[in-house]
Length: 232
Image 1 (cartoon, rainbow, N blue to C red):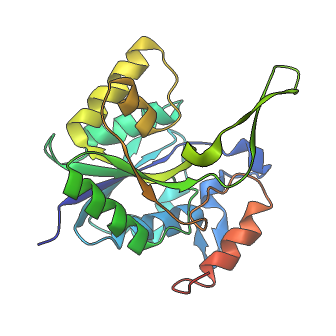
Image 2: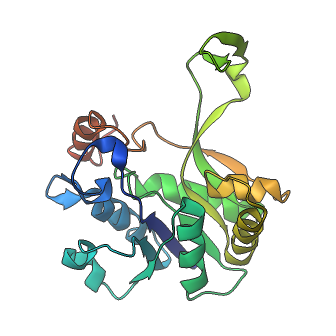
């Protein structure tokens, strides 16, 4: 029997670093927007019951997406920060507090369902939240405020966080509410969970599951998408 899952995609950002006239989640690759690619990946995961999108309050583009007619897809109004948007979506998820929710970036269009299934299997087996992540392979430098190297970090225990990030609905809601109330910046869901002492498992992801941030990232994402299903 498949595990009952719910998805959340915060998509209220403006993507200013892309230098485009529209938010980056609505840029098109292979005939679909980045948001559609990310949404399709979650909807394709066995056991996915709903996916809730948190949209900018003045979003006028989402309504043009055919996928929003899928009965599993719901929308809410997001907030000024990622944590605000995720929290708004979590509060609208039609699930129990003990159910599992996967939060995925709108701008990670190359996510493979097999990677999500591996994450789900690990989380369920350990009954503790987890995230897709990649071990750091580059040499990493710690800099001072002037851009000078302070030290070289030991990379053997460093990982680059990806999404989806999977946690129980009630616990993640509590963690985000606590961080926002305290004014503590959290850049992903895992950091909010870590702040309250929850365990977070690292599950090896793929380099193709990168976040489109700069204009030059689009060509790489398009190349990966053109080779869906291939080992690259």
